[in-house]
Length: 435
Image (tube, rainbow, N blue to C red):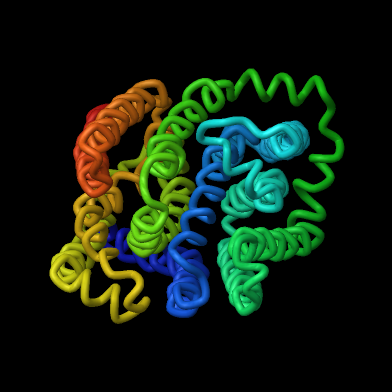
């Protein structure tokens, strides 16, 4: 009876903390979704293509900016080491952003042919890449720091502020035709800056101002190098893994934008946004929550299988029926919501749904490789996924069919995410056998 009561008490805590994290995500997602009802009428599919290309570079470069050291903040054994990892991550982010600023400036002054030709054609958009990388890097570091302290409210507030401010900026700039090309990228930068300001304000208050803050200021270069070596698995395995995954995810824009009609790519970008924005926000929230909770349990040699089972059960009980309905109403729903010029978007939504459903579970459990120090094995899953994606898009290019390329692209994502989920569950089973 006592064991049952303990589990009953544990579940409300998980729900309460999860609600705090998801609340900011839900607000941000609601604002973002409602904004697309307006943005798709203010901006053209070509504008969405440029924005998707801009953000594809951001998602790849942000992984390099901190070398993924920020993920070690959660698992650091003490506050002194967590402070050192935080400072190390912030320093790396600043250095990479400055170097990137110089590279982008040179590319704007001396354009090159190929996939980077858009930098010379749209220098104002390209020059927003370095500040956006810097802001995204600091946001990730601060979110992991607050996550370690189990201060989920500020994380949710920052995400809500980021989404709201960014949407307002995009809509305002969309009202002026002269700002259409730069409107969505600049709005995103403004929103991310607002979210960072919220974190900085919170860091000046207890417990950070009296705890980890002073420890960060006392961290010297020798300590930083020691911590960097101790957590070298993150740049060695986690960073390449996420770099390969991000590169593969953004490959349709980085590669196919130079070969297919931009209107078609704009339709796909909207489908990708509609499918993955809520999923990514959900995964980010619950990955942070479960990461802290299960890492602590593993350190204390406690069982985690029941937590994993409950999470997967609850998620799929809600998701599967919704996805089945979405498959049948995708095309008319997209046209109704976003307007007649987005006809064809629903076909891409249908292609993406099986991949999205499997990703909903697998991506939320990505932290298990960090807890069990199996980053190297997980890395090879993403290498295989990248190879499959290159083949998929290559087949589409050979046949001159963008739709075929995306269908195979989504199929490869679904296949590898299924294999990844099976492997993650096997890690849990092996751990349970050791208890």
